[in-house]
Amino acid sequence: MISRREALIGGASLLAFTGIGTAGRATWAAGAPVSSGVPEGAAAEAELGTLAGKKPLIRLSHRPPNYETPVEYFKDVITPNDVFFVRYHHGHIPELTAAEWTCQIRGEGVEKPFTLSLASLKADFQSVEMVAVCQCSGNRRGLSKPHVPGVQWGYGAMGNAKWKGVRLKDVLTKAGLKGQTIEVAFNGADKAVMTGGPDFMKSLPVWKAMDENVLLVYEMNGAPLPHWNGFPVRLIVPGWTGTYWMKHLTTIEALTQPFNQFWMAPAYRIPQGKFPLVDRFISQETDAKTTPITEIVVNSLITSLTEGQKVTVGHPVEVKGIAWDAGYGIRTVEVSTDGGETWHRAVLGADLGRFSFKPWSHSFVPSKAGKHTVMVKATNPQGATQTFELVFNPAGYHNNVIETITIEAA
Ligand SMILES: Nc1nc2c(c(=O)[nH]1)N[C@H]1C(S)=C(S)[C@@H](COP(=O)(O)O)O[C@H]1N2
Ligand SMILES: [Mo]
Image 1 (cartoon, rainbow, N blue to C red):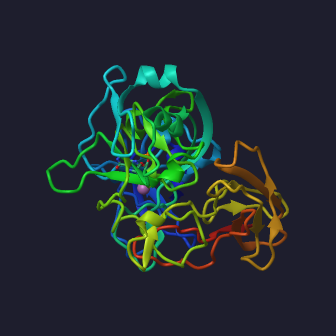
Image 2 (cartoon, rainbow, N blue to C red; image 1 turned 90 degrees about the horizontal axis):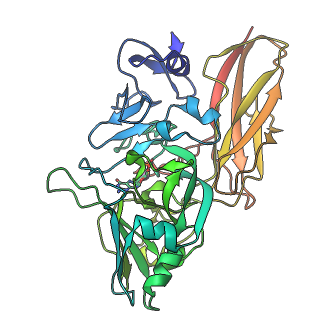
Image 3 (cartoon, rainbow, N blue to C red; image 1 turned 60 degrees about the vertical axis):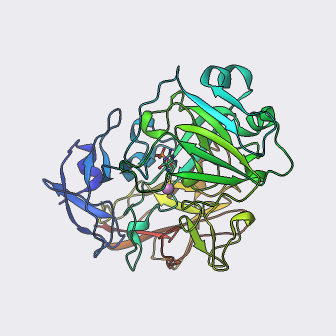
């Protein structure tokens, strides 16, 4: 049996799902379908699949395209464009051209509606660059116990890129935002294949839309956005989960009423009071029990070890990985190599900005033969940290359970 990562390094494109290690990460062998780290009992099985312009990714569904990044690639703090995950709600995704693309800036909340072109976006507004994590609200949903419906993501429904674009605030200011505006709504060019599902649209509270970190971007890691990641222009909302990061933007609408649409409610909601206090989206607090998901919870991932990996007694083992949160910053990353009995501070690496993955590392020497259980826990400056147990919610959001990988020293 070989691990999923070894198989990937070997370039295999068809792998077999052979079971779940104690860490909840799937292991694989060549020859048949794979699953992306889903626990036993979860229905989804996936294979590696290739979308035009992408390397093989873990395919959860083809139409709509939902492809996750194998953990392998998070060894780099920046996620390359050709392995960046892809998430869509609908299957009809038109190929837009840079020359023809336009976006309407309109709505009751603006004085002077106008049509934005890519040339004007680049020429008429100040450009800004920022590294930020895009993480799907449902990242790690496939690990939820009990199982919950939805795309059965493993660990890779996220990525960290250097984005380039302009401030949404500057574009809204050009349109003249009225004082009565309470939300700004976004639509993209993709549609449901058959008439049926509601068009995927999202809104932000006006204070967030006017935040200087919220950008309309046209470049990702120094290249035009890949088609599957929103070409030619998408919204980025650093610190908030991926659902707000509208791709292939077509309209930006300033609203004087709350945006009342399926993808705002009942979709993308978390139970009130179960997660640490985060940015509130008050105009969407339309029922007593739920609230829109907003900020990413603090989280971390081990990227240097695989479940069951063999190491040598008396030789240093490098435990490395990444940590991230909603942009408060990572204060500490702690590593345990004895199943949570004792914790050691990891060394934090390069700072690419507060919305970026933060690399960390910790070296330890296994002094005796046998199993060693490695765990990692990140904490932000607010004291928010990761949970030992899943905070269950029906959509499987905000899974930041402390990761555990067992390695074997001999
Ligand atoms: N137009 C459009 N934008 C979209 C979506 C979509 O279905 N259509 N999905 C959102 C969700 S839920 C996520 S997690 C991110 C994923 O971004 P990516 O596909 O570039 O990784 O895109 C967001 N923007
Ligand atoms: Mo998402």
